[in-house]
Amino acid sequence: MLDLKRHLARLAFPFTEEQTMAAQSIRELARDRIAPGAAERDLTGAYPIELFREACALGLQAMKVPTEDGGAGVDNVTYALAMEAVAEACASTAVILASSNLTTCILAQHASPAQKDRWLRPYGAGRLGPASFALSEPGCGSDASALATTARLERGQWVLDGSKAWITNGAHAGLHLVFARTDGPGASGISAFVVERGTAGLLVGRDEDKMGQRASGTVSLHLDDCRIPEDHLVGRRGDGYRIALSALGAGRVGIAALSLGLAEAAFDAGLAYAQQRRAFGKLVADFQNTRFVLADCRTELDAAWLLTLRAARLLDQGERASAETSMAKLFATETCGRVVDKMVQIHGGYGYSRDYAIERIYRDARVTRIYEGTSEVQRTVVARELLR
Image (cartoon, rainbow, N blue to C red; front, side, top):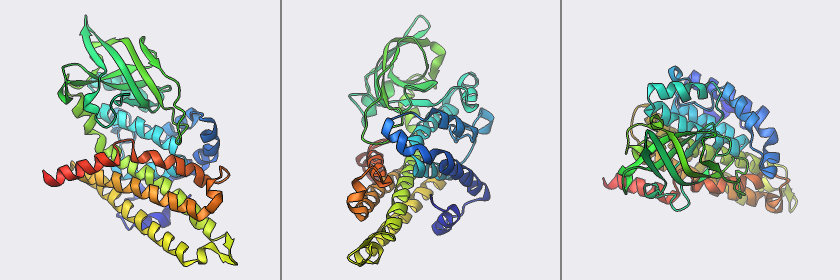
């Protein structure tokens, strides 16, 4: 893994001592505990529940939750450094933590005091397992305002019916943040609910057999006459879509950093391979083309880092930063795709073999341009902000 001191020095960003210390602790966990089993988890699809419990000891499952609500209370810059470090070791573990942090960040911002006592503080103490963010559906991904899952109020209970798709942590989560339609068409008719694990009428589908990030526990959730108490409504009725969007900026920064973790791992592998492999009587690194590829990739990575850190800093300063977070997510994930592809090329035929980590990184990287808002959605957001 990257040497943290050299990595942060190259970025020339004003990191605080607290941010650096937190990043170092997380990087040690990633190096010593998460990285060694990453290839095996990719092969078997085994969900890393024990690693999640170890991550809880560092507060990685609730990083953005204030300390008074049971979380780690870190800022967005620290969160980005954490996501990068974990993803460099294992993208599946990183997205498990990203989904959990997205859900709990929303609860920290919108849950009532009683709801925080019931769910957020026990969750922060590691007693509920991971959390899931259940917004996407089989018929709507990017167009979340078109969701079809319904919730009707009946004798003091909400009755939920519908299906959710591509839910990270879905089979293992202690709580699900579910978005459902309560009041007619459009974004204003959506509300947010907490559905606890084991609730009658909540059915968990099989693990998706995915190309990459295979150990992240991605499933469908089916709600069939699923009844929950009236006080499981989070925020106000009809505010669900706004609540979902409220955390997307920080979520996009997290996925940008996750992508950079993958890209840094790929770049490190490609650089090392080029300095060891010989072809036509000299090292691969001695060819001008290889040097140009490495230079271009390093330049793009540093540019993506600066966009990501800028977005994180703006969020920490209380800015809305819609364009900046979308720019970061767009550029970081697209850069990740380009860098990883070029590092596979440097490996030649070995880059196509499971014996080399670059093959897994290549598969893990592709989805970053899709989840948490596709590249096309990010471009739409940036253009909208420019033309506002």
